[in-house]
Image 1 (cartoon, rainbow, N blue to C red):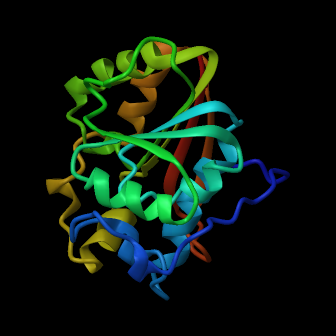
Image 2: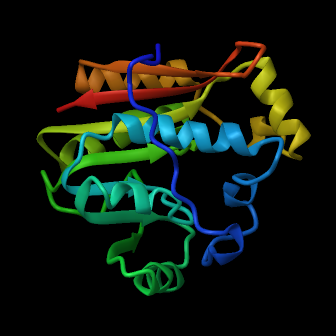
Length: 218
């Protein structure tokens, strides 16, 4: 469960029109939507609350870089790897804001980094897109690049009727995009890391679980 005493971390966003280098499916367009925006921001904020800070952070699947301003308050270097983002455009955007970010193209199954390189590896709404048989390989790669004592923080949507209906309202048949459930992801993460802390984001008013965040230490 979410720690009620944890300090809420508000997501620092640019005007949505300023984000560059992402395709039409990037969720950044939902972050200021009057209906979906709150939940989209809160899921990121819950992940950020678990990031302890340190020297280097790696975000896998950074997309538009919506976390970068918050991460810059906690880490000396911000690194990112993404399959689809335009590295040059996004690097240029953050450079124009006075921030150096170190971005590469790649995926979580083949992380292009040396062993024990990062204090934190962050994945927000990435792991559910993997096939269940690929989860073990993903967590082995994440483990490999984390320093001893470092952490992995991930966030994934809860696989439920209410989340499936919510995505349908946004125009997505989520069964065509999400292949691993939060339970499968947690089980594989625990098999690799052992220890864990899990927080849950719930739907306002209804109270239904919609998002789960896991924190693991190497």
